[in-house]
Amino acid sequence: MSSEETAATNPNAYERELIRPTPARRLQWHLETLAYRVFEQGLRLLPLPWLASIGRAAGGAAYALFGKRRRIVERNLRIAFAGERNAKEQAALAREVFRRSGANLICSLGTAANDGRNVEASITMRDEKIFWEAQARGKGVIAVLAHMGNWEALAQWIPRLLPPEVKVANIYRPLNNPLMDQRVLAKRQQHGLRMFSKDDNPLAMAAFLRAGGVLAILSDQRAGKIGEIAPLFGRNASVTPLPAVLARRTGAALIGVSLRTVAHGRWELGFHACNEAEPTTGRVMQLLERVMRVSPEDVFWMQDRWKVSRTRPHRPPGKLPRGYCAPATKRRRALLWPDAQGSLPVPPAATPDDVTHEASPRAAGEDTEAYLRRVDALADLPLDYVVAALPDTELAQACRKLGLGLINERAT
Image (cartoon, rainbow, N blue to C red; front, top):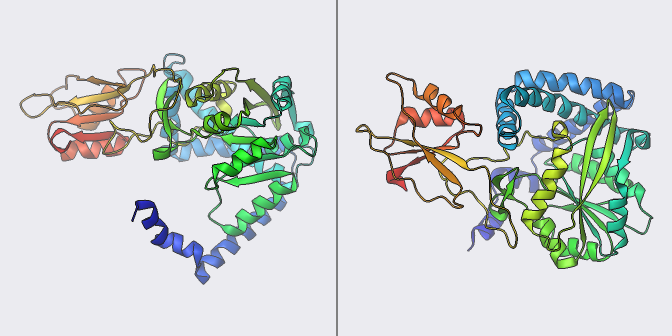
């Protein structure tokens, strides 16, 4: 029996509870839904500019309170803008990312609560000709999106652009609370948006595109084992191959869509052309990067985008992409940790081969964690993992605290 079949026939405790929920779980779902409905009623009372101000304040507080999430954002920005922005500029950008994320979150909830009323007044468009030219080809349109801006306004605005016979859809992750999930689905469908689950068959998505539909795909999240390894902001990552695969199979046009904050409660919807002859995952990531660079402050950087595996950091998940893919320009950094005699370990081969192995002298009596922090700060890009000659408990603890991968030479 395959691992997939085993997982399907032996769901974990949480999955079993979703299939056959206990009375306590059902009560939790109802209470969560009730709390959200009360919150939603409050959102209806306030205009979007006020909600944006409240969200910015909440985001500023989150920056101060949630250190782990702050460090993830700072690392993401350090990788994305290495060599472009100095440390002070990156720190200021990280603070603004939290404020903007708070504003966009609260405004998205407020837009949903008001069923899209006044959404036209909050959105302006730029380069919409790109969208119309792609749609006029008649083979469907794949819109490549990042998590940025007031995504609820985007979801409600795009269907209003098109004639009734042209359908719009996006791909979503079902919520863990089925009552909330049904509520979100009903609201989206009310505005003419079809919803594909991330677990739906891609053949259904291809048929939707062949019928001339517009399919929005959020493409900036980690794809894990099912992804392809391609550079994003010059650093290799496991990324979704879905936009490129669907474009090749259906002939649908690829465009990028950005949503940039221009004032409290106002956003600019921008369209970006992809004129490449062969749609590949590498080219889709280049398009996505252009989208994200329109307003990095509006991008939701809080997922560990270039996550490092604790035990296999030299072999990230994913497979090599099909077709053209630019080489990574930002190599991963690995520190070689000597044994007691000063001999450096032999690092295991990295796949892909995008790792720079380095060694740095350690001062007498220097604390392990302080040493790792110092080595990390020696370059624009962060340190990713350590290769040790022998197991070292103090080193393992420091790597775990700093989010670094660790390989023991004898274990490889």
